[in-house]
Amino acid sequence: MPNPTRGDRLLASLAMSPQTPTTRAGDPHSQPSSEGVAAFRNAVVEVVARIPKGKLASYGQVALLAGYPQRPRQVGMVLRGLPEGTRLPWHRVVNTQGYVPSRGRWWGAMVQIQRLRVEGIPVEDDGTLDLKAHRWNPGEVKKVSANLK
Image (tube, rainbow, N blue to C red; front, side):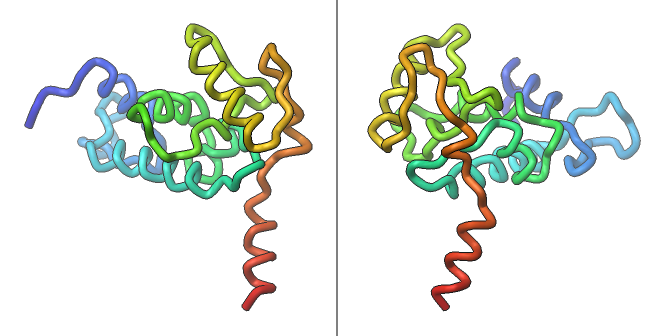
């Protein structure tokens, strides 16, 4: 098994939650298993993949829907680690204040702003937007699909 990188170890340590299996039961200093980290990443990816065009979710909302309500920062880490050219709609995830985060990555923020504008979401040049007006409500999707049956 290859040695994990520093980033992998950091993500693993931050991804720990009651739902994440640990290598030594009951040891608060043990690292989550690779299965636990993979489960966290997969859960985040599954939620983000469901965000429809023209809608937004906050990092905290994605964490909650993924089953890890205390892990919004780690959602950002997962999204930052996506491969370039991914088809996952990562750009639909913003911070809870309705702002495209740009700390240390202004070029990524510009791409995100451009993609949101293409989807019809108005975004100010400084990255602010109306999250309340465009927030994704997963319950709405279920109600609509239930009515189609």
